[in-house]
Image (cartoon, rainbow, N blue to C red):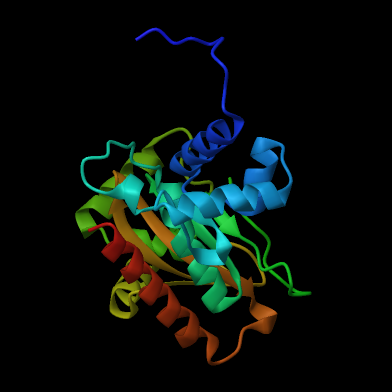
Length: 252
């Protein structure tokens, strides 16, 4: 088919199609993001999104963000599978709303944890900042322990043998007895914990999300240990387990 770039364009249709493309690529859009992408007033972006939602091509979800609607998601409609960060983002937002502390999405690469997305609890005077883009050793992080605990012992050993044999191996010796105890405890509680191991003054908790599209992922919550109370461990753990279950259910 020959595309005629000189054909007259119906601006409202063009804008709606741009929003549909952005929702497919990013997973969800806020009114502010839509207005910026289209270079229009927020009221115009709101009307366009509301129209798409009214016809089933978009739907409003968490934090008043718009994502693909049932008309785009119904069987027979070909679409690319969004990346892990996009698919997990609504659940990460839900976790953040439930807990009110800084939340991250992380993946396991060898024996390292890669933080690929996060939401900072910016309203606290004393808070834990974002670590998006930061790579840390798995054995000292809550998310690393949560993901390693999913693996059989022989695979954990194999990963560390490879890491230790390389020129860029761990700078410090690893206490494997402690690591194995930590992984056993993580399996019992279903939540990985880190009290000032990766960073002084930080308490962190994480739950594994399993393998999603080939990436082993986890959600984590971190907060200053100075604000950590006796009931926080159970509260945070319960919300992590619940949110992970909801994400897994949505992938079925």
